[in-house]
Length: 69
Image (tube, rainbow, N blue to C red; front, side, top):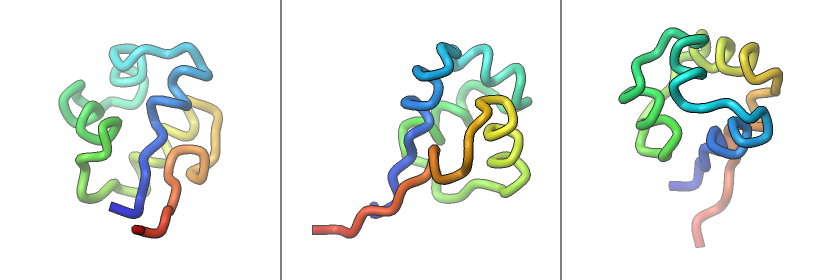
């Protein structure tokens, strides 16, 4: 898939665990894990906005486009 999710990178930069992010964002661990591993098919803008607020980052820090080879 050409959309890469770098949520784990931003979490590491902010030294935040999946459990902590889950509590602050209001998502279940399983849904956040699906997003983190890049298996999600979609993300709501409101969820992306909340993640960006909590991690103090921009959407482009979390989502990246790469052309398929």
